[in-house]
Length: 475
Image 1 (cartoon, helix red, strand yellow):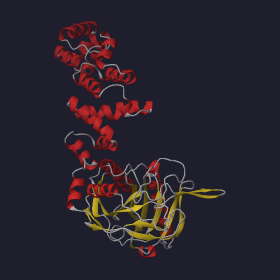
Image 2: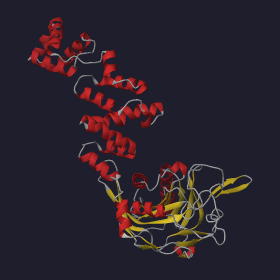
Image 3: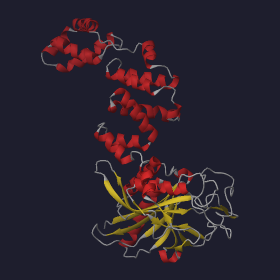
Image 4: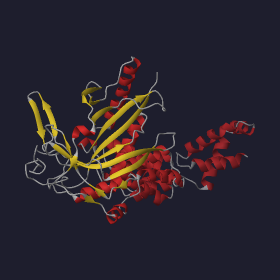
């Protein structure tokens, strides 16, 4: 029997501030000496009072607005009580019943399908825990991360496949980066996922028993963990067994989820209002200020590329995945007036050179005007695409101007009618039999004649122009 998965994601993203959420310790994700960025506040020493980071509130508000959320005008912080070695306070300062934002959404896209809306239940702020490292001789705790500002973004259970879960997470990363709320770099621990998953018999059946998978730190881990858990739960249900509501962890080595503990409910954490922080008022003026800072969001940019520039959906997706690449493309498109050609050159030819050289856009040795000039020369049939690609390789390696390379290599195509007609006359005179066969209806020989002209011109003739002149000559 085939079951329908129901997935909800909780995304934890580190807010892009200079300091932690409730103290002045540095909010750095780069590895440094253990327990270097700590103080009595983030270590939970008695009598130390937290002071809310205003910039974190601004950036969280901006993220809420980008996700179409309603901002709570009167929010507050709460203590989430649990004990773990990486939690020095003995509780986490989070938000329970009054999150900063609620009722949002984003759109995901799969190839060949219309965009689909995924609801977002809430976004709340909280401070991060430390980091545990386990060794043969014991466990070490690094509290540099303790107190770092986090946004936890909770989706509605409206994700029904592994592919959609990955697309949702990727889109969230793009949005948070676009608005500047988080760098969301998973390799640096700035973004991680918890996934809640259950199975049901069909799309109209009640939800099944929910299992949570904690601390997935990459898109690949998210995909693998969800695929494994769907398979595990399916096998249990097919054997008539009951799914246990629990928290599981993903073990990369074995490729399996591992049971960790029974699933907690909100009451287990004994939430109560944080007594050391007053309620937080977010004014309409504050909301409008953050709304004014919102850039064009990834979904809107993809739609613009597809509708205005007429780009293929996959090409638009590839461009929007990298903000610097999208900006570079738009500069090339503006200078050439040919967005499709600009997109092809940027996403295939330029990206291939960058990948082979293991370089980035800022490493380019030529200005954007030079690539635009080369694309224009191709569109004007001044050089062939093959010659242009060779020209670009030299440009990329040396920074030489395209016109200089083309002149030096003799790549400029001959488009002068008189010169081309002279070559055409030579070819037709040399192949009277083929000319007669063409006249008799064997029109496929046109390509043969074009090839002969190109050979005599040593590749410098404009093949499109040659074809046009041959058709006129042979008609």
